[in-house]
Amino acid sequence: MMEEEKDSNAALLLEGIVLRLQADLRWLQACEIAWTKRSTPQ
Image (cartoon, rainbow, N blue to C red; front, side):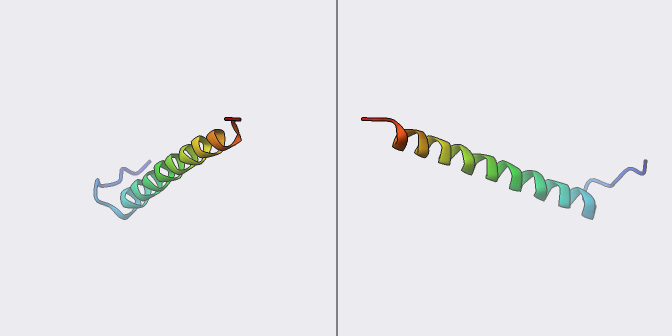
């Protein structure tokens, strides 16, 4: 397997994908909290 340089296009693309997935997970967690609070009888 060919090693990629740290600042290569592939490394930047993978970093972008990881950052996007992290943001999506934070958003889903926020939705879960909001939905849980809304569906819980008060």
